[in-house]
Image 1 (tube, rainbow, N blue to C red):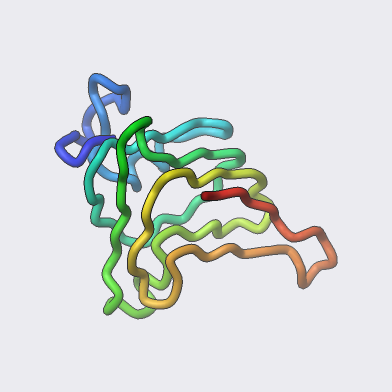
Image 2 (tube, rainbow, N blue to C red):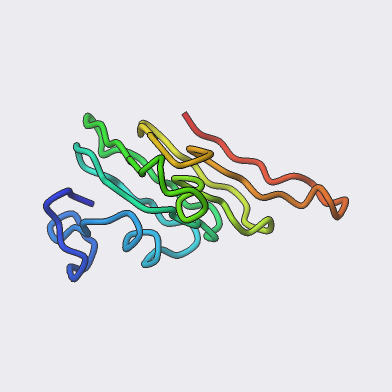
Length: 121
């Protein structure tokens, strides 16, 4: 991803996407999304992909920013919305905003199943 990318691109290093939503929607289980240096303005991104890594490109720093005044439409910046999603890594990124949460994780705890585990820095 690159702040000057284009969501009509292929999503490679030489043809990066512009938005995190496009990168997540184009991802499969086990993929890695690397964000180049800069601030990415976003709405709420729901993640339902197993073992998805979202991180800054090596040696760079990415920031995901969402409005704080959108109430229920952008309750969280990143929302792991499927309790059956497993794995996932957020690494070397800054998350700012969301009306209620920067990160939100749904879980299976009401059904007696183990809570999802996530690792992030």
